[in-house]
Amino acid sequence: MSSILVYSLEVNCFLLLAVVVYALLLRRQTSFQFSRCYLVLSMLFSLLAPKLLWPFSLLSKESLTIAEYIPIAIVTPRPVAGAAAPEEVAWETVFLYVYLIGVIALSAIFLYRMARLWFFIRSTPANREGGFFLLESKSFTSSFSFFHYVFLSKSLRNEQERNQVLLHELAHIRQGHSWDILLVELLKIICWCSPVSWWLNQEVRLLHEYLADREVLRQVELDDYKDLLARQALSVFPLTLESNLNQHNILNRLEMMTKNNPTSPVSRMMAIFSLCFMLGFFACQNQALDDLDKMNLTMVEGEYPPEVQAKLEALQAEFPNDEFAYVEIDNPNHMKAPGVHTLIEIGESAPGQLQQLHETDPQTVVQVFMLKEKEKIGIILKETGNFDKLAEYTAKEDVFSVVEQSAKPVGGFRELYTFLSENIRYPQQALANKIEGKVYIEFVVNKDGTLSGIKSIRGIGGGCDEEAVRVMKLAAAWEPAVQRGAKVKQKIVLPINFSLGAPVTGEHDGTAFLNKLKVDYDLEKKSDTWLISGVVHSDEGEPLNGAVVIVKGTTQGTVTNAEGKFVIELEEKLPIVVQYVGYQPREIHL
Image 1 (cartoon, rainbow, N blue to C red):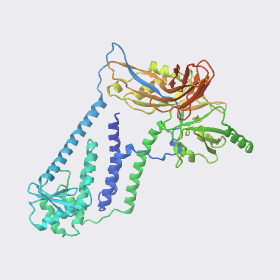
Image 2 (image 1 turned 60 degrees about the vertical axis):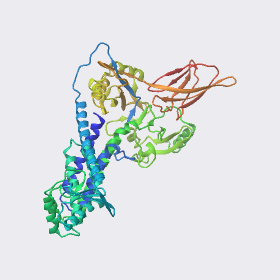
Image 3 (image 1 turned 135 degrees about the horizontal axis):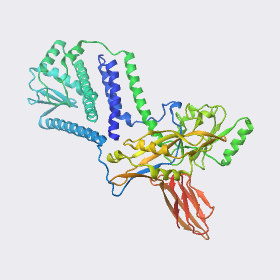
Image 4 (image 1 turned 120 degrees about the vertical axis):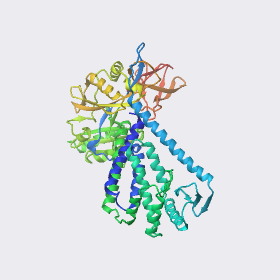
């Protein structure tokens, strides 16, 4: 679905919930200023919440998805010669165009009304009185205000009536009601198809009138002011951007003038709590989706660094009956490092992805330390007791994510991508609506290597989600994960990127391929050797940490550091081969 429609839908959902709370707790109460603040905050939060992410997690440990994140597969459309695409109604596009037409129409009306107000300001003589400008004209059929401008009709009967109207409009100015009007107009434009936004438009204006009436009644007799309202209700000024005396339900206003029913503290707290809860809920939903792009905890296998080996030996000597495991976190300050990752969030107040360690048993985390040379963070964990909780995905039986040996496709990822290339077809609906983006497929690699629980956990619509799931259900068995010498289940997340690329026509099928490496290097001649220094990065410019650089035909090689840099010295100018998981190998002839 178009991101514009999704955003509008999320705004409407937030507004609807906020309005329900308002109608139940606040609407018939006389704490008008509190009600106004609640509605204004509801409108602001509704516009911001869909794009808001918390710097901390409100999700429980059980609700977090921990899964192995494997390199991305990319799907692009490719024309098939001589084939014509079948015509189909792109309903998503139709809805989007209808929505945009409504937005444009209401925006034009809003700008027209602003221009009318500007014309009145420019064409009517103004007197500056204190902090406002007073404009009087017979062309104003009623009186109104907009920011620090007061427009008074010369049809007012006498000076007493004029003063009462002026007091009313000055109350609007002092309380900044014009800002609320602009906000509610913006909301009405964005959510024009929702009755909630139109209802809010009237409700906010009515609250403004209640507040202005209360201000006037501090200086004017109630009976005199009631007579004024009755007379002014007979004429209505056509503009709707301004705060004005006559546009709202007179009976409601008269009732509220004599009513004294302030909002109870309990109702206020319930309203505030409901608003905070909704804001947190929407923000955490966005965070849960965004986490798919951000996590980068990596299991480390093979030889331990010397300082780690020393720590492990000391711990093993002190606790001979316990077993310990060691993991490293790659680039804790670089949230989008590509490669093989485990999706896990750490924490409450610690930097980066360390924040979630507080959710494991303190007895499990033995030591946390910085490896300065490798620019990584090392964590030693006790494998007994609650360590299984860290390695286990929620309550499903023994589905691991932190394992000694991760599951992988039989034949490697290259064979998997070849399979995707031969089977994925770019959906016609996605092509018609120009939909592209990442689809995240989650599945479990069982102990026998079969795949189960295949589903899309984050998609883009247009048939791409269903196509990705369909193809993964056809995939061959994998080599299962291994934990402590035994085969175990492991949850995997496979991102598949649907990209339209250049405009194409006709019927299309899809092609999946590896990402491309980019290598920038310098070659320097020493006395008897050649020195090669360079940087390996993705096609998006992100440095690749841990890329393997090998001299072709030899066993000589190195790996890149956290900045993607490498240095290698050659006795003769031989080609070098750069490899990184999920990327096409790059051979460079010097």
